[in-house]
Image 1 (cartoon, rainbow, N blue to C red):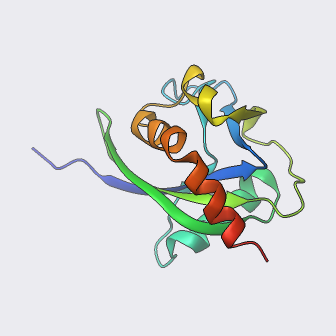
Image 2: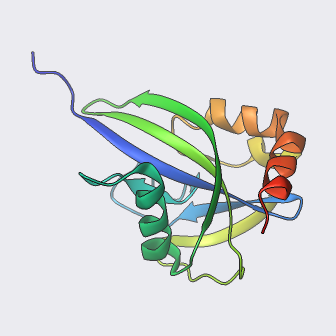
Length: 146
C-alpha cells in the first residue's frame, strides 16, 4: 500500500484588537472545506519558507499584506487520501484592509466564542489552545508591534 501524500500548509491566525478574525469558506465541491470556518493560508510551495508561503497566500486570498508575528501551533490531520501538516502563525493586518476571494465572510470573534463556529476538520486542538492562551497571544502581538 502506498503511503499517503503529505501536504504542508500554513495558516494565519489574524488578531484584531481583542478579537480573532475567523474566515468562512465559500461553498465548494470539497465538502470538508465547504462553508467551514478556517484561518486563511494554504500550501507551502517547493523552495518556500513557511513565512514566505503565508505572506504569498494571504496576498492571494485576501489581497492584503500580513505581518507574521510568531509561530503559534502545529497540527497534523489525516484525511482519507492525504495527510495535512499545518503550521499556524499569529498575525496582524497592518492596514486592516482586505478583500474576500475564497471566503464568504469574516467574523471578528472573542476568544471565548471560537469553539461555537463550525471549523474545518483538524482545527479543534488549535482552536482550544488559542482560546486557552489568548491573553499570552495578545501580549506576543503587542511585544512585536513596530
